[in-house]
Length: 321
Image 1 (tube, rainbow, N blue to C red):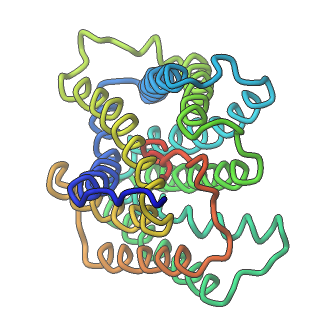
Image 2: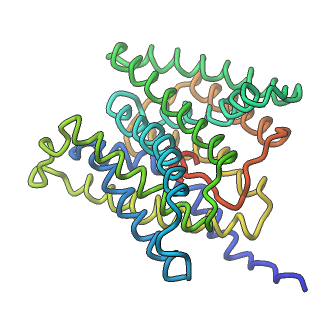
């Protein structure tokens, strides 16, 4: 007996959630860290979201205490995705535009290709390699344009490097999670990853003095509102919609958010935050999105759909983000 087809309304709403909400989380992060310490903000956000999702999974019948080896994997995956991936992007958005950060994070698919190639020694097909080369050329265009249009070139250069490092961590976490998956439901796995990543982000926040810099009396309502937007819509609504899509459409269709999120982030950065939108940036954006389409369409490696990875900007792309 075949399962009933999902309604068109549910499909539209779910795709709108992962397209628009996940694309908007870059701007949400930027607004949140205006008056909130970055690592402490991210740690609180993911810890709360992880606790909610973990509790939800338990109420649905999941085992309350997963095996210790599954927590070890959650710690590694959460560390790579949330501490290394999202934490890097959150910190770097102090120094780089949200549009630039979003487009740099879009390099994650071809970093995954390179890592899989290095680990398995299985050469990707020529279309995937072409996508990697095209994507790298788009990044070069984007970085050059972003640095020229920013007054603080040194800070921007460091920020760009941190975002690319975060994208690499996200790619490494994605590859690791596909080879060493957390053997529980996707809901429980996401909760465990968020709890583990939130714990590590709290340690980093303590090490960098974020709690001492927190002053809620001086925190703007915009930052507080952005924090709750990231918590509720970015992590909870976005993840739930993506999980539902994985069970109701093909993985290739669900993954199309990777083409749309950078475009949404660029447009919102321009409209809301008055970030520069140059012709070279538009060309670079088209080049990067085109490379992602090539890689995800013709790539041989596929990520298992039983435990979707978290999004880099917001967790769970990408690496919601």
